[in-house]
Image (cartoon, rainbow, N blue to C red; front, side, top):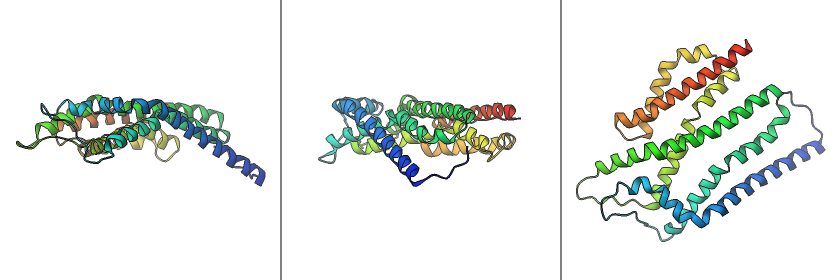
Length: 244
């Protein structure tokens, strides 16, 4: 990065105005997406709850234990989806603040990292929804004790899946994080490669925490995380060889 030069009070005020403008743009993007999604909030919630409803016993349904849940749960879902969908705009506005103090070569790498980060985050969410959720809810349904009706509260279900969406989205940032620590000089590629065994164990530990307690579920998350680490390591090697 370029050295930060001394700024006059007028320049600082101009910078603060730019920050305010970009924050307002981020907020506007979220509100626009939310306004487009909210009329379909009930339909979206129905779609997002499909992985669980597919495993409910015959005649069972999801329930709302709070008076406001039928409204607030779809509202919260629409707001969170608006935030996720508007993430490219938010990152672009953040990049607009950092670009002036970054060298041209670093700009190219940073833009690629930003695109990769957003794509991997969405990929993690899709992986959770289409692969992990059906497997997870099928497991939960299979271990429900006899005589117990499986009827999940819609608000609790929403909190659960949003937490998993975030967890998987962040877990899929491993290639970006691996590349960044090497690029920033915090650790070298050789040290990371020698630490592969610890990384693999860490991946399975994370898989054990985030998925149901069966080997198949844990492997379904741990193996992609390991592969993503290898991708980040490969990208780091290419940059290191060019720098050398």
